[in-house]
Image (cartoon, rainbow, N blue to C red; front, side, top):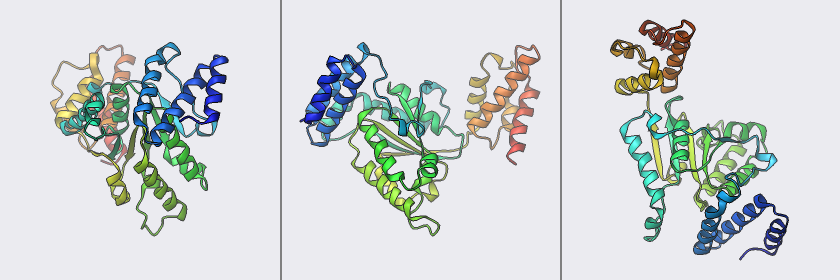
Length: 318
């Protein structure tokens, strides 16, 4: 049951009409009961909180000051239709959404819905956007954990900060994107690995394995080859991203240009986008739109778009 201090704080926040603190403590009580194995009671508390959340505003939990520069809140919704990736990846995303919507049916058979996802692939191929899509489709807030800053700024106390982050997962349900995950996830046997990084990775492995929250853990890395093999079995699913093919490039350009899309065929222009990532193609499209606006034109010129795509390829030596 709730601790004496939690009960006192609940009563105090109620009489002081401090709804934010009241909800925070209530979530902590639910998390405490879940850790004790009292899942029915924990679910009932969370259901009461969700049912009455709208009466006091959507944003309930505030991060402590010492985590504020490690966790960014992203409130920009991204719809599934905006994500241009392989059909196999879309199927995996839809499976996560379907399991979330029917998680109670799954739980009756002693199973749990997928919550821990590893995203791998080249930069700019849709990993961060996928986390944003999941947050939007699941109606959950998106929090981005800056792993590189966690390592560089808090060297010597990284493990303690990591523990605080996982406590927040328990208290504040959301989609947590651990960006630049390879900052701590590199193979423990690497000769250049420092002792603290091995300890931090071991801590992360324990935290993610014992995590019983209802938050989603999404880890993103540009280099799967350097990740420790022990990580893979801790995740429910692994998404592999690649550079867009011709069909995806066509969809990307058409979606991004929108009303500025030229009436001529873009088939030859598509070839100019070969070896570019999704993000780079979108940036070239944005540059083309700006050029059209400044030239008082209603449509993008194919020559301009080709030039912008070539500029991107030359910039990266592709």
